[in-house]
Structure formats: structure tokens, C-alpha cells
Image (tube, rainbow, N blue to C red):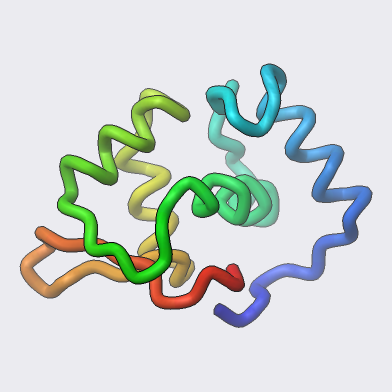
Length: 100
């Protein structure tokens, strides 16, 4: 995936600490409103998925529900920003490239 935003390591760490208050393996406190922050958060969340594995929508939802109750918004962000791909019928999801 092509970098959409220029993010410094200091900025990345600050955003992650602000939104993952219980640590990066824990839940997300809120999903940010600003796209740059969403992008930083999505870069971290996508690490919970395997490259090349095909997921059903319910599997994606189950993983994202552990992170934040508004899992549909995060799932849409993944698709819109190219973190994840979806089949034309919307039943299957996958990641082609882990370098997001």
C-alpha cells in the first residue's frame, strides 16, 4: 500500500498511546475523527490479521469487535484506504500486502 500520510515515529507513538490506553494488544478507546489518526490506528490494527488468509465478514467483525464496538466503521476504513480487500459479493476479505 502506498503511504497516504507522512507520519513521524514520534507522532505515531503519541497517537497510539492516546487511543490504545491499555496497550497495543488491548481495545481502542475511540476511533478518531481525523483521517491521519485513523490511518495510524489502522496501521496498528491490521497487524492482527494474516496476510494471504481469506476471512469471512463475520470473522473480520469478531476480531474488530474485540478492538472497538463500531467495527463496521473500522472495516470500511480498511477497504476505503486499501488496507484490506473485499470480494465483489462482500463475503470474503483479505490482505495482499502487510506493508501498510
